[in-house]
Length: 586
Image (tube, rainbow, N blue to C red):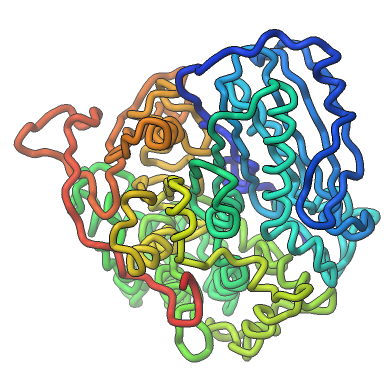
């Protein structure tokens, strides 16, 4: 499968925004012996997992980073290095350790260590760990690609992780847990004392890793930060075919950049400024209440209209098939009985700069469909998900069930890849805390899926506010970027103005909640000029505790660029897009 160049800020191992809090104590400067001796320790791992290799080296200070001990491990979860090899790195600051351990997540199919996560972690004083999720050494995966019918690169298995139960389980949850066990032991060995608290920070695939840890291994972390989690993994990846299909079922269904611009302008004209934000915003504050229909912009044969045909550089109306495609994007992926397989993208996500639909149109098959090759093998084709690829209809239920029920060891594909459990009682019993966030304008993992998970937990436990809280960022894309506030200690592109300040750093807010018992009620989000911190702050707004929403205070009539000009108003749970029974959280 050919892939085009990823959009900046989307398909990357995002790791910006890891921030710490006050230093608890300092470790004495480490000697080379202290570090290199870590290569000789015996790690205690779960079950039959074995250490394949372990190395350690001192790294001198430089490039804004402190001197640190770099430990690299290769672990096989089932003891068979031909089936499972998980790369793990743990970076241990030689000075300035804040007494905390930080596990970090990945993006897409992983396949490599996120050095950006490690760098930002140790720069804030954390002993920091990351893993390739077991998809790199044996399978040569990268963020976008992890298997196909044709194969990409020498030695890359055609079907990705097909028929390798250990590797699929590693990706689903095993690698993250083993990283945590190894990382905490190495931290204790290096500093001769255990970390006082352990935290996990991840977005996208990292958000799935976060929820897997909360559901399966609640003793691993005291606090977990989960951004835009890809938790309903099997259905998310199958639904990516729906996004592809609705823009390819007919030649004039393609949502070109001019078409997306026109649609975005229509959404803003009808809804911006009527949901608590400003009429001049390039995003919606509460997109769930916007009901704009793409047929309002459909061509009707009037004089001088310019349809958004594939070759049109500018246009004034969308074709009927483009209207169908846009409305289907906002509705979500449906199975062939009309059930919601996965929620749709909120209105506002169609902004051309977001790029996801444009990127999808340039591919020869759906984006991120590699996962299906793990279930069905290299002979699988995306067309088999549809009864007729000439209509934008839903995926076939037998294909969905076949993927979910594919055996993975003693479990199933859905059993090891989906973090769908809404039962967090064991996590709560541990006294742990979970903060979730998502961008309302996320065009990769619909924000409604994050909201739906929170709502599912709330349906089981009305007191979830003592251990789970959710914040939505209006105008933010996937994990970061976007026209709205997008820097608040999240795994986006920029650090907040004051890293480590719990008022505008969500990781620091989590630390304060865990260690001081002060739960966050809002976090200040920042939008920099041109998303460049060196150019100053364009505006700030509060991210309110869900289901509350920020609203410009017309009584104060204050400076609209200041967060103090907005108040958090109570709101109702967002339920405009929910999974149908049998799909999603349960």
